[in-house]
Image (cartoon, rainbow, N blue to C red):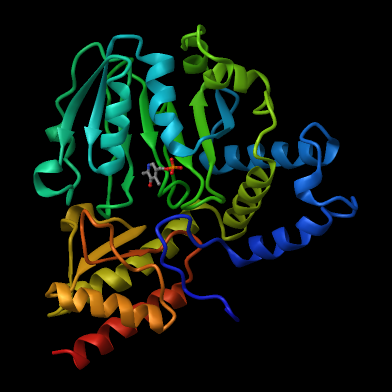
Length: 361
Ligand SMILES: *Cc1c(COP(=O)(O)O)cnc(C)c1O
């Protein structure tokens, strides 16, 4: 790891080292073009190849064909929160599953364009669990249903794909667990994410959306806010975030080199298990997420009192384990261990937790 730390930041987050090495060189001159990747025209041959390759590798990972569009958009995941209802809600009703801060923000935006029916919510327990399929109370005749597959702040994750019902498109905010495990796109009509957790730089959003949905969207909207326009222009309606797309493309290649999504899932499960197993046996630390809802990406946990939480974060940071402070709505600690987070970093964290517990009890 040389001079780089095990960075537990929730986002922007750690990226694969080979990708950073490639980017470092590409900044100066991209391949043998004599022009840096930041300086290439988005309409030139070099960048066209970059975006086409990124799209093709994304399709391979997601397992989607020509019936889906792959779009590289701007404004992060938060822009999708309003673009979705703006394009498809039209005064109607949409179903939302409320599993955390990000779901709530999506619901707030939807209300600007129609009715957001909350099909189930875990807010009663500070979002520490994911409602079961049996808990979902769908409103009839919904334009779409929306859920957040991994709740970055609460440290919970869906272990099933909600069934939105016949003819109701299912939309997923997968910002913090995209391509961390196989994804069944047959059950989804749109999956979107901000890039900065698992895929690249902040500001860029990836949208994988069924073509039939794009065609059914409202047309009387500003051009930049229409999926249709971006799809038709191959994400180059205006100047796209070229550097972000380049990095994302390199991350896709890296995932494929790791053996694809099943291999990545196995690695992620092994990493998360190390921490959850220790939390299960520790007398000082405990996880905040219900056992059946634990996230493989963001592990949230508490020490036995507030003072120990602060001391733990301070000492971990000093030891070269930064980014462990939990979100203020949950408190305590959060270890974000996305795809690119090394196994050795998780081992270092658990070793540190063990020695901290021994020293302070
Ligand atoms: C980080 C995050 C967002 C917000 O992403 P931005 O790119 O900052 O808009 C939305 N949803 C989830 C699940 C997230 O983790």
